[in-house]
Image (spheres, rainbow, N blue to C red):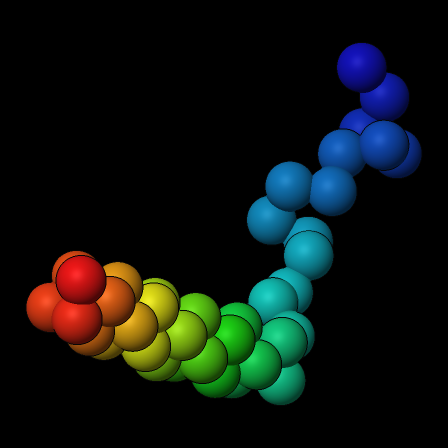
Length: 46
């Protein structure tokens, strides 16, 4: 393999993207919690 095509260790993570990923994870977790609340209320109501 030519070292020209090797990018391992040369790519630096973008901190803005990492922060946005954390925000997306929070949104998804909140959405999942809301779905569980809806499913629980439907089973109680019957």
